[in-house]
Amino acid sequence: MRLRLYNNKSEYKYFKILFFSFFICMTTNSQVVNTGINDTAAEKSLKKFNVSAYVDTYWGTDFQNKNHSDIPYMVSMNKINQPYINLAMIDFRYQSKNFRVKLLPGFGTYMKANYSNENGIAQYLVEANAGILLSKKRAIWLDAGILSSPYTNESAISKDQLLYTRALGPEYSPYYLTGFKASIPIQKKINLYLYLINGWQEIKRQGNSLAFGTQVEYRPNDKNLFNWNTYFGNESSSITPSYRNRYFTDFYWLHNPNKKMAIALSAYWGIQEKIIANGNKVSNNWGQMNLSMSYQFAKKWSVSGRVERFIDPNSVMVNPITPINGFSTNSVSTCLNLSINEHILWRTECRIFSSANNLYLNQQNIPANQLVWGISSITIRF
Image (cartoon, rainbow, N blue to C red; front, side, top):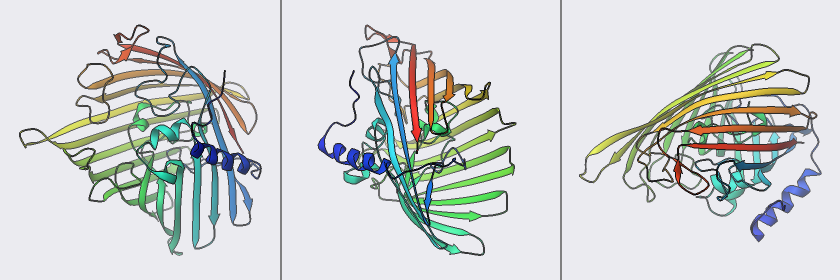
């Protein structure tokens, strides 16, 4: 069984850069800031310069259909039937008193699926941004470039999540944004972030107008984090010419009652305005809610689980692969986690999707209302 690392010369070039860079990376313990943001890689400090590396590999299977090559409706770790790399990246950072830079080149099946609409070098950039300190007294920063997205509590970095696979919620909200981000501390426990961006997960702007986003992060104590995000933008473009304004609000709560347990609750709701054939404007909704929990039952072992509900009755975000109108599904997951050491994490997860309609395909490629997904992963961070 062959591990598929790259499919063309361009991907091979970036693989060589990443592979060589691994050898200059050392490790320290990571510090979780907010699991919804790519800001939790381990780091080795060289004065003002920090370097880290991250490799996420997996092998998955659809227990009901071995004929296809991926899990439908998923972006992250979605390939099956042979080993793959979900995401391998190097995290380069420079931080001074008044200036900072982040550059995160990466490759893998996550990048190939999630950055498919981008061109050139942008297809291999998880993040690339620079920031300046606007106010030393108030600690206000302005960053510009390809930014980590604040939407939902799950990012591209699986090691920071309670389970290995992503909920459907983050799969259908932006993983990255491009534009400007202002970081404004309001109080000791409250941070405000303002975004002026190209659009809904766009490096190259597709439409004619910019979009706006907000993030409010509230930490009442060291055991709780509440995060509320919003998005507003006109989504009309050559790809979606009938779309107009999109309104989106997202909330999640992270709770760590003790050292052994963690809880994450995430919910969002979106409204997409659209011009229909008769010229009238309609508003279509979609949304999701999921609850995840994790419990450490031994020094290196933990178990986690998640339940979720995702609804998109007018297929704003998800187009069914079977002849069904609209998309609505549930999912239940269980995941066994082994922290082999401070650098290596092994996980095995089983996830069951079920829907009232036949959104999936069985072994005979006949529409079915259930899919059973098994997946095992090894994540390494340096």
